[in-house]
Length: 305
Image (cartoon, rainbow, N blue to C red; front, side, top):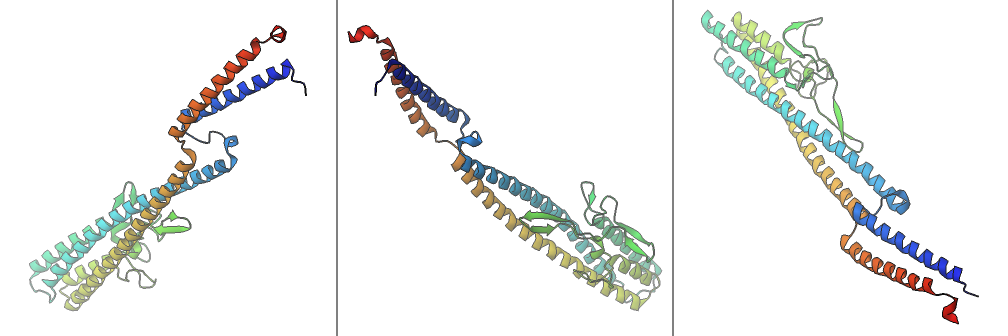
């Protein structure tokens, strides 16, 4: 095969272009810090990186949901603790008049104390997180509890029974709220998770009994308040178990996120030390190619005569 000057020129130009392309590629990698800057760079790893990116975003959303649910539990637990303390005070007050009293002043003082404690229960039932009422179910933009029963049948609760849930992992949800009707106005006609005591009605019945010096009524009210106290404690236990579960899911999501980020980093992040060596080698080769091409281009027919 006869090697002509044109072939030599074309080969030289091709080698220069290839060397320039390799230098540009290395420079781009160093500049961006990424192994894959466009899908054509590595179709297989491009798909892997996109999949990891989607999973990381999903995990971040789970983490955000868990954070919101945890805050909700903290606020609910604070309210429940206050309710429990209030019921303890109510039991102490009842103990002072459990056998009734012929002294109207003593009875009136007890009634005043019980009314104040009942109002505290209502206030705690209307606890808010931002502009949302924690115990209102889905109807959480208005106060769910009233100190006076209304409607037919009479009720102290105007919220609903909706369980608000958030996704905390793939196909895994966690209930955030406690509908107030399960807490302070439980109905014996419906299966309840914590108890069947209508605590607010128990206060009203107790107040009526104390006013009338009705000893059996006072004792029945005392039992109802005791049952209500256990009901609140059951709700506290439920919240505590939710917090434990949310903490576990937080750790799981953190581990998943760290694993995904490590895989992403190992796949996408460049090795600057390795690239520095390759850049030096490629620059040397490119300069050598330019030098050789310059010498070849200086040859003419006279050099062979």
